[in-house]
Length: 114
Image 1 (cartoon, rainbow, N blue to C red):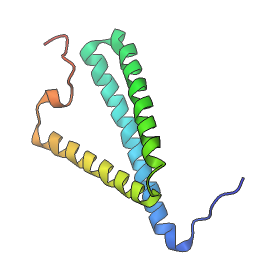
Image 2 (spheres, helix red, strand yellow; image 1 turned 90 degrees about the horizontal axis):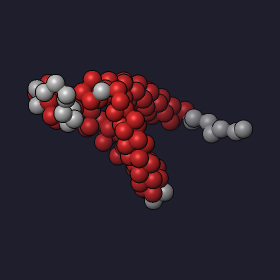
Image 3 (cartoon, helix red, strand yellow; image 1 turned 30 degrees about the vertical axis):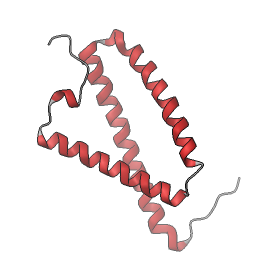
């Protein structure tokens, strides 16, 4: 198996992007755990199958749409747009948390005890 070498002029960009993708992956896994536990505490364990089903359906559609877009865009432009979109999304969520946005914005499922 052969691999493409990272050239000396690209090392800084490569390691920066690799670090950002690693951080994004860790944050994404953390968000998955938090959102699943929030769902379970609001609606109960018996509803988790529906969560998994909807999550899988959304992932299929999102992956298909992403593959469709990736095939038609230049890779550098796509990576830049994805990085900017992820950064702005995380910044927007941070601002919402700091600003004390209403709970319905973060957890749209009504709780049993409300």
